[in-house]
Length: 69
Length: 159
Image (cartoon, rainbow over all chains, first blue to last red; front, side, top):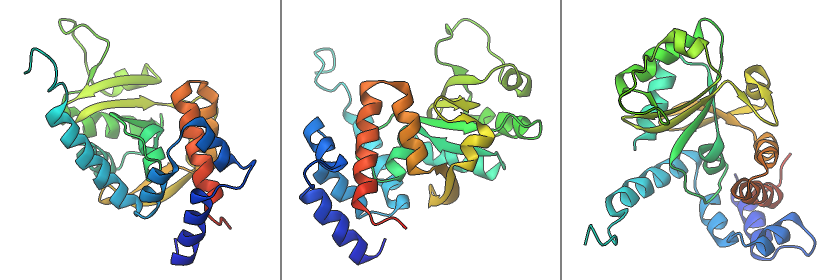
């Protein structure tokens, strides 16, 4: 994606046009700001991000359970 | 979980497959998390032994199979089924020979794109087809994926 395309995409996600599918998604509860973050990454960077996220989640998953405290 | 290693093993073994599901959503820019790898695979006779060999080192077992029941992971097992929900040493991997809302593997592959990710070139569903597959399930989380993808598609100037 070129910087110009990214700028257009960010503007559309920040200020969805009334009646658009983006506006419907926002209304549905989708956090469009998180999409902005992901859009700035390449597919390869998205995989690494998710991989790191998964590793971190596995480390802390269930840490608040009474039997783990 | 190490899905990067799982995908690399499949690619390096020459397996004919397309990444679908949550990882496809992520590749397209979706912000959701996923805890399994969904793959649509070719049931071509040459592909099944490659698939069996690629995952064998990671000890695949059906997730819903009681631990005390034997399970053989080989080409014959793959030939006798179209959906395998596996637990492996690398994480949960779901193998599907066909995708609801899209069709069988040739149809899935025809609606896929090549992407540089996982340290390899991989194929994943194109965004319109991924949306179609998500809407086909009717599940709320898939509807959310579909709306996310529609937002991403509509935000980008597509040719």
